[in-house]
Amino acid sequence: MNDGTASGVASLNAGLFPANAGESHTFVLQDPGAAAPRTVVLVSAIVTSTPVQNVSTIPGGAAGGSVGYMLFNDHLATAEPALINAVRQLGAAGVTDLVVDIRYNGGGYLDIASEFAYMIAGPGPTSGRAFETLRFNARHPGVDPVTGASIVPTPFLSTTQGFTPSPAAGQALPYLGLSRVYVLTGSGTCSASESVINSLRGVGVQVIQVGSSTCGKPYGFYPADNCGTTYFSIQFQGENQLGFANYPDGFVPQNGATSGIDPGAVLPGCSVADDFTHALGDPAESRLSVALLLRSGASCPAATGAAALGAVNLAAAPEGSVLKSPFLTNRILRPR
Image (cartoon, rainbow, N blue to C red; front, side, top):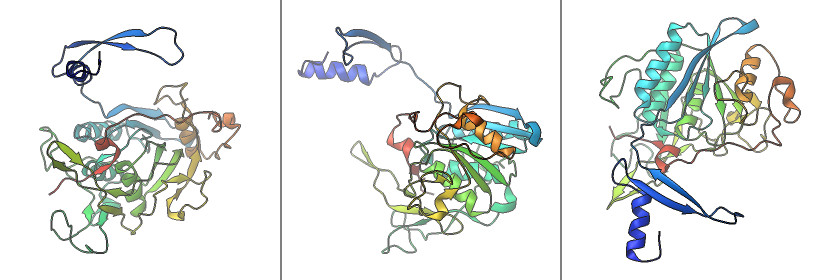
């Protein structure tokens, strides 16, 4: 318990930030409106994040073919082998379309985003073209002020970058070679996730958006450590092959609230509220079900009364969110 003393503060910090796995800490919590507090015992553990989940193949129905689905939550180092395995699995299954669920993906490493965009599109549209070009302010038109290097476009990375021991750096990435992709988005779709959308659109891959507007972070930075504190100050803006980077209000489905939005940030697709009644990856889940129906030629459901296509009422349903660290809600560059 924190009673304001040094020992109380130390006890609270030990409970919130345990030094070792297996530590047991007791918390007494007072819920708003509750007559009495409740006691919760938490045991610390080492938890490994699984950034890519629910990789599956869905029958294409009347539209024919088959549809790949994956939930992609974070552009972490461990996402590199996970994305490779997912693309290999879906490629072996012969999928003809892909639905990428990034509604809760707040960002992370831009190199992971570049690899993933390449794995979706393949070498045809991406070879020799820019995944993203950094633009700093007018004082630094051609030189990266952090590294001192000349600014050159970041390519679509076609080989592993060695984020983890396996696979090692320099291995050829698998790819699906798709000309379109469906993305399920929400307000938590930020930064590096938006770079995947923007970069693919820049090389002619059709991106169909189902969900709500993304968060709008075309900006980025190099993290800088100083005396135990890491600073994340905005330093640059990322442009695609066509020079587009104007989406500070996010990417918006075409039937969403598009007033005042740059036309380049308005995507084909549908506004569909988050669905908490079905598991992510369930074909009956609202956003996924609408993506599948769009593939078959259906029109968007209305923002209200969307039950005709299995979507929930946009006006009545809240937006889901996942609390994440600053590292996982931004686009992160690795100095080369």
